[in-house]
Length: 71
Image 1 (tube, rainbow, N blue to C red):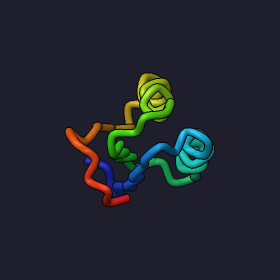
Image 2: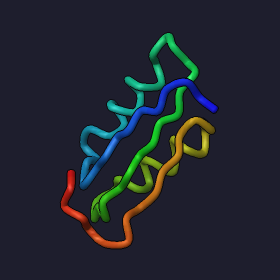
Image 3: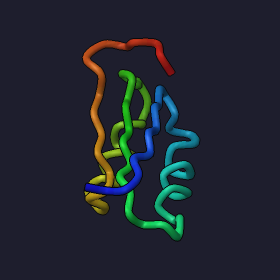
């Protein structure tokens, strides 16, 4: 169980998502999980998430069944 959970909600954030993920992954503290909640994005958000998750097991993501408009 990681010591820290980092939550990253996203909706159509493809322009900034890679930079945000890179910033989290570059931290010196490494005992964390990155939880990414995709609120039904219609851009390239999910493919960006999938490419990072395939390379780093600390990344856990999901897509909401419907847009909850929370983010």
